[in-house]
Image (cartoon, rainbow, N blue to C red):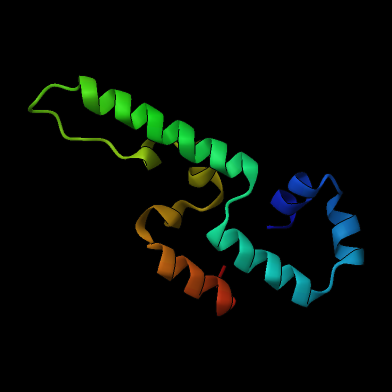
Length: 98
């Protein structure tokens, strides 16, 4: 979380660790559970577009693909995100599991 936040805020992880309270970091985690950071939105949108193109052009006997299959960041940073609903992700964040 700290590295993604540092990238989004244009700060270093060290600056965030020295200048941000645990409470504020928790607030950021809750915020990001509902509002992805810009580079995460790019990944989501690209995954959706690629899945749409593949599904439009697939053979009828071929299974449909999901956007998560084409998302780079979601697979590397949160592999379990593909199986969790938004409510489950929010619960994980608010209970300290995210």
